[in-house]
Length: 261
Ligand SMILES: C[S@@+](CC[C@H](N)C(=O)[O-])C[C@H]1O[C@@H](n2cnc3c(N)ncnc32)[C@H](O)[C@@H]1O
Image (cartoon, rainbow, N blue to C red; front, side, top):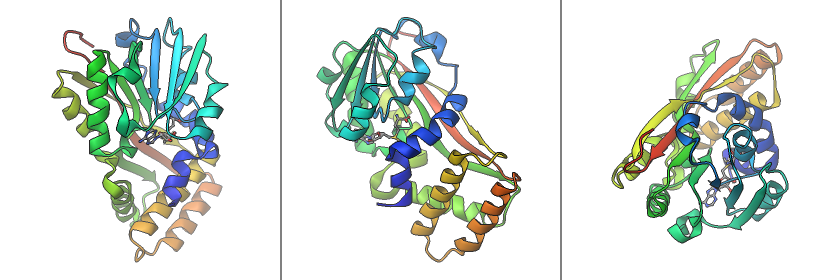
């Protein structure tokens, strides 16, 4: 398992990123979702971060349905969702069917689309379209990162990281475009909202973990890049509170045929 895999899915990484996610997630889709929040199906729920953000902001959430293929994360999420009714389901999204989403009024996911393959996104789009409900996917990586101060190696690290994200058929930075296309073929209308992480200059754990994961994935992808010195330079800037990073993400609102965002 690579550094990037470890960071994506460990409770420690999910906890570290929860604050940055909460600050970044766009409020833009909430008015369009106001009438749809009664029963939310949260795909790839992790430890339930999306529920903790959404329930206080979306009126009338009665029931939160958690879906993940990782039983350990699902168990952690179960006790930490502030909704009147909470239900967990161990499920591989490659096998998601409309019946699995029965009763949901909204299908959601956070930091999910970019770790799926194109096939998996088509399967999710089919299942959601089978319900006729809206979908909302927050915090998909856009593939653009801006570090200040600049470094001559930034572009090479970013390119290697993006290639690493696409390993094994994962969509990585192509995820939002692929989802828009998949849902458009099923009559859904898409709106995107920028949701960038803004990290630093304080050396918070999320910034350090992100930096190490970003460079670690790039080194795994392109072992010939001279990244030891690069990482040392960046760590020194972080420790000296001289590093800021913008990691661009997009939130995606998908409204079914007949409904308008
Ligand atoms: C990057 S984490 C995000 C977790 C959570 N949504 C959050 O924002 O903190 C991705 C989550 O999706 C789950 N996941 C990834 N691929 C999946 C699949 N094919 N089927 C089910 N769950 C999946 C992982 O187990 C993990 O919990």
